[in-house]
Amino acid sequence: MKLEKITKQSGRVYNDACGTAHGLELIGERWALLVVRELMLGPKRFGDLKADLMGISANVLTQRLERLEAVGIVTRRKLPPPASVQVYDLTDWGREAEPIIMTLGRWAARSPGHDPTLPLSGVSMMLSLRTMIDSKKAGDMRLDAGFVFGDETYRARLADGELVVARGEVEGADFVITAAPEMTAAAVYGDQPLTAMEAGGALVLTGDKALAQRFIDLYALPPKAGT
Image 1 (cartoon, rainbow, N blue to C red):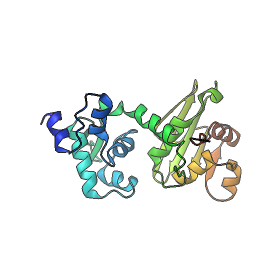
Image 2 (tube, one colour):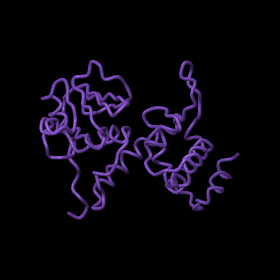
Image 3 (spheres, rainbow, N blue to C red):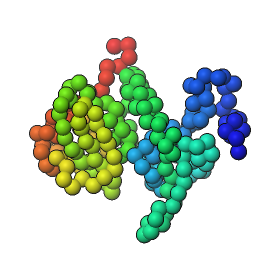
Image 4 (cartoon, helix red, strand yellow):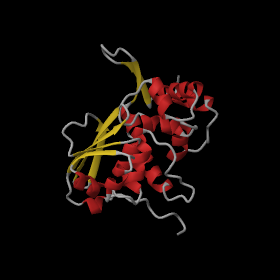
């Protein structure tokens, strides 16, 4: 089926040659961009996507995945044995949407209506770390951090002012933070030292605690628009 026909079937056609308009035709439906976000760090099963996209129905998720697959943003495949389960992943072109998600997130964080205490997925938290780091403040700092969110583990490596995040085991990291994504966000963007949050039971911190605090100090929410 041709891409033009698919976009027209969605009911979201702007009849505008601007690439921004066509981008909205591709990923402008509710939940579509968040599905892309959740796949940004690798493939996921349908059930995992539904669990991480709080509030989406199975029917709507199915529709969004089918459409994103039809327009070439998402692909479906089966993992090799012993897993042998079907997963959804981004195509190479779909993965190119990462700067869109990062820029939109950084811009929207300045909204007076943004509530950073709402639920977060593990992927969302890791992309937030990648997006909001103060590269100038980081300077030549280098570190390898681990994050544990329930059954999910992630690695974040900082070098030359850039933070690269990925799924991965945390063994061998300079420090590891174990907490719910929401508590990790509170640690990163709040004003309490990590040791105080650890003492309060909000998180578990192992490894180089001083380096972990130096890393957290690289983050701050931007000023709200109009202030």
